[in-house]
Image (cartoon, rainbow, N blue to C red; front, side):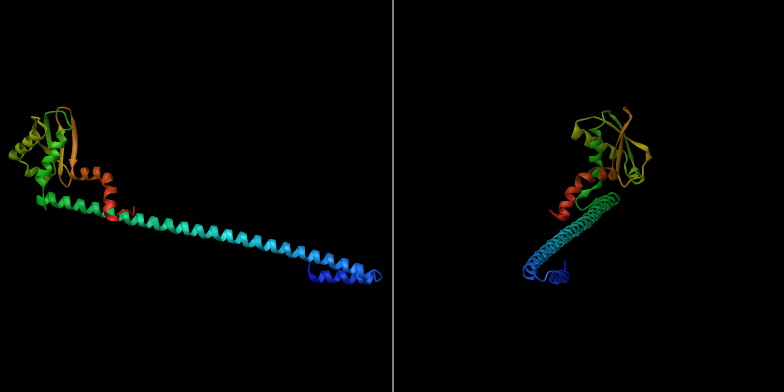
Length: 216
């Protein structure tokens, strides 16, 4: 109740009960003070409640904004990391392509890599009659002497005596070889693309650590 309302009540009491004005006025003023004080306390509590709710809402809203900002930063960082990782593998693929085309890159020799791929395939298949399938470029490069060297590599590393022949088919790939077991009708895909894809997921964490350290 407002102070005007209180004064109006007091005036009415004074007009109606002049004989009891002192006592009535005192009582009225006490009641008015009580009402005013109660109203003020209620208003204060309500104000504090509204402010508290406002602060809580503002706090929650602020936390939401901060959380969303952190998520966006993390997402952008992960996107940047993924782009860098993909770029690294693209560079590796390009390096393999260059190695296959030129035959040598830094300390790597393409011929030795192909021999290693043939040997690893021979450890998987159980037959002794194996057929090698290359892309058009490598199919031309492999001759009887190269096949003999490949057989010697297999024997030296696995102890197996096998027969190697060159397929009349060719495949589309950067390099590497597909080894067919003519006896068991199975084949091992050891092309460069397949090998790179096989190790990509295993190497992804290692590449990320090299690129970004602990920030992954």
